[in-house]
Image 1 (cartoon, protein in one colour):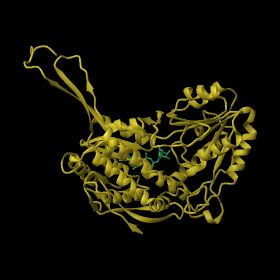
Image 2 (tube, rainbow, N blue to C red):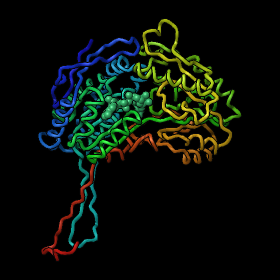
Image 3 (cartoon, protein in one colour):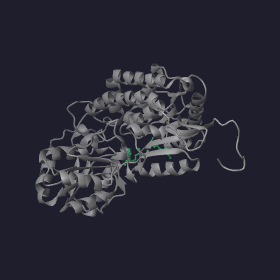
Image 4 (tube, protein in one colour):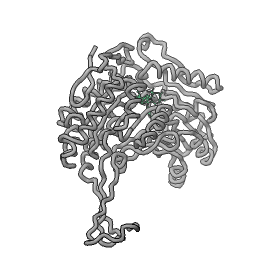
Length: 492
Ligand code: TXE
């Protein structure tokens, strides 16, 4: 067992109450790390430290270029440690080493990009209509920002938040998911090594009900950036509103993946498989509703099943593995529950449909890649987020029907479609209600491009130039150059 401490005010600390909880390896089902079980008191200590670091000490005195330099140094350290961090993520959350290696080698880009942006946050001089008045704007940091993350891609989801927050000059308290705390604590070691002043970045580990609740209600927290479930996002939105905290929420989806008869079929099959079975379906952007144009429905579905059949389940630390375990036992039960629901609703299970029975999978939290056909869009399997390797297949006849089905969802995070018809590409991209639309590709994410949801998939966008605004507030400064003050009883 590895034993970890929290990182608060530049110090490595146990939880105030001295308690710990275990983190499990989803492949072996065994506990492998002891994590401090933070509570209200620990969360408060971190907020006080972050507030102090925001208002005094070296951080607020740094130039924007210095902040950028620190962020780029952190990016370099993540790059140097990419392999080690990737292995930790695999052991803690069960995702494939191939996927996590790619992710960890890519994550430094967030720190380079936003590090570069730190000294390009410019205000404006406004040629104001008021005589003898000089008016300019300043974009100032908000204060203490909180990042609450889910277990599926811990460091990637954190970097979406941390890099712009620090670039803008804020301080930060991170609360990783209780299922995958280790990589965020490892990142804190690199933050320390990079030379960020104490209190600028803090990590409090623990559960949503106490640590999460304290971080989202505390009066000194200015902003909450959250990735997780719709239910928790709603709760956070409600409590944050009471103290007018700024909030960004990324809450998952039920993304439609549409295949037209004129698509390049083999590419589309690859895209569909990567959309739902990569990361064992545990991604917010999973293409979990497959809409197939009726005239190619049977032939296309057969090809999807044939490729799914070749997917190698196994040890996520092996580069040959294509489908790993799911991250938590709760998630395993949830996925199996949805498979039952789909069967009861009358969907036809044409592939997979349960836990693998081979002895090599007996300890790990595995579920077979599963495909349901004959799904109607009003079934729960087509409306609710499973967050697992379960694909719901729905036929359609016309473009209009595809759009109608695609948009008949309370979610709107992402969508994909496959066609070679340029007019259709432009029409469909405009008509689909989703924050990201992929055409003839799927699951492409960049630090440069906005990511976020329509409808119940969330509020605000992460990534891209504009996302720095989530961590800034604008001040308008007016300076009079007049030698006398005019009538004090009327507005100027
Ligand atoms: O999410 P939670 P869970 C979906 C997916 C999955 C389901 C449940 O469908 O099956 O959510 O996953 C913290 N105040 N997504 O239980 O509860 C919690 O400690 C403040 C989609 O992991 O939302 C953790 O750090 N914080 C998603 C974080 O919130 C609270 C990715 C997420 O936990 C809190 C993951 C509270 N009251 C799951 N309660 C996506 N958008 O991609 C909990 N937390």
